[in-house]
Every structure is written in C-alpha cells, then in structure tokens.
Length: 338
Image 1 (cartoon, rainbow, N blue to C red):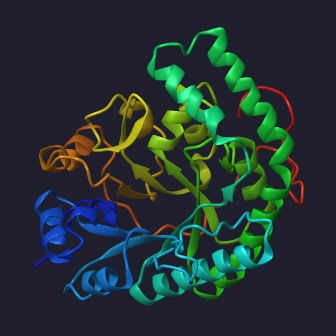
Image 2 (cartoon, rainbow, N blue to C red; image 1 turned 90 degrees about the vertical axis):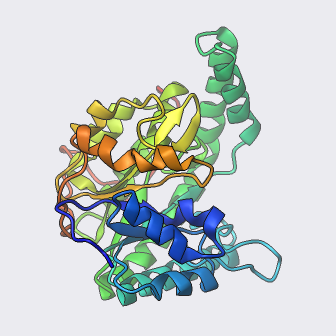
C-alpha cells in the first residue's frame, strides 16, 4: 500500500540491481526510505520490468532509454548501439530501441524519456590519465593540463560527424515522441568524449526549439567534468535552467558518482538554487550504496530544499539568449574547455 505524501521524489531502478531477483523487495524498501515514484533504468530486463510493473499502485516518473535491456545476437547489450553511430545499421538499432522505450513510457503513464545522444570516437585513455592524475592531486600540474589539451584537441577534430548523426537520430525520435505525447530529456554526460558538450547542448536544443525535448541535468556528471577542469557545474544549471525538465540527483566522492545524496562533496545549496519547480526529481543511486546512506537521502534533500511538489512538466519554452540556430550543429574547434 502506497502512503500519499505531500512531496514527490523518484528513485531510479539503478539501485535495484542487487535485488534483481525480487523487485518487490526493492519497491518496499524505496517506500520505507520515503521515495514516492520510480524511474525505470536500463538495467531492467524484460522479466524484471514485468515484475516491477505488476506491483499494485506503482508510479513511474520517467524512463531511461533503452528500457528494458536485451542481449543482441552479437552478445552485446541493447545499451551498446549509439544514436551518434556512423554505421547506419547500428544507429538504426539505437533509434528502434529508443522508439520502443517511448512506446513503453506512453503505456505506463510516464512523462519523460531520458536519452544519451552518443559518443565521439576519441582516445579514452586520455581521460583515464586525467582521472589518475586528479586522484594523485596533480590537477594543477603541467602534466594534467597537457593531457587535458590533447583530449580537447582530439575531440574537436573528430566530434562533428558524430554530433550530426546524433542530431538526425533525435530528429527522428521527436516524431515518435510527439505522436506519443512524451518529452525527451537530453542528458549531460560524464565523459568528455560523449555528446553533447556544453556548446553542443546549446546547439541541439536550439535546433529543436518548440519540439518536445528539454534538458535533463545529471548532478554527478556535471560535477565530475567540472572537477576535471571543463565546464563549471553551475554553468550547466544556470544556463539550461529554463529548459530543464528533470534532474538526476546523486553525490560525488572524489571522481566517483552515483553516491547517495549527502555522502559526497557536491555543493547541494548551489544545485537547489537552480532547479525549476516543475523539474522531475530522481535519485540515481548506484547499487553499491549502503542502505543507511540511501535511507537518509530523502531527508537530506528536504533539508536542502530540493524536494517539493513537482508537476508533470509541460513542453519546455526554450530560451536561447539571442543565439542563432546552426542546422546541423557544428562543433567548436579550439577555445576553452566546454
């Protein structure tokens, strides 16, 4: 039995991974911890999804694409194909899985589908080296800045065709989203090689102005890239506040995200100041978190003024501060990290 509460806060099924043999236990504990809604995450299989949706009275805030996850004929998961892929068949698969997720969202009464736009083919070892140097306390060293500049330069040379492919994929998905009365939430990503960067987010949202798509902010992702010297966390929140339809709430310990809110070092006061009233709030907490830390998440977010009533968000009114839309989007070469 669900007890009606005066606030609304969802928890992602990401945390259900360790309880995948019994979804009812996950839901029961989530209610005990004060959560009221659920976001369906890409770890759900067709079996666990069916088990979850069979629970009486369960309320779904949003769905993370693709959901459910399946194993493909090549042994890879359906999370592998990217909307930015330059291979037509692979990109078509990613689009099809996203359309299936949109259809699921309509069926179960969710309002938004969170999408990842993709990734550029950039040497991942450069970012790995930055993480290693950061953990060693060398973020201000010449070595760190040299690796960072190499990463920026390589991405600026390679990203454009992947961004254009993502643009075309999203264009197709918006037709499906419109037909199903679903909002697409374009999420900021955790790796610098991923799409969109800050400027690409501007360009993508600008190119689809007036359509059912908005910004989905991920606290941990923005925080990690900020710590690595890229776009400041506050910039993501303040610039895209008017376009924000939802937010993933999780903390960061050094460079590890998906920690329960309150056990890391994110500036939650800054986050609280920049969340629109109608944004969907979802705690996206890793399955490795301790129960005691998850149990305090709702009260912590209440203390910070982050939890309150939220409504089903209307299609966002996108404000672009006088910029001119460039169809298709172009990546920016050189310049400061973004």
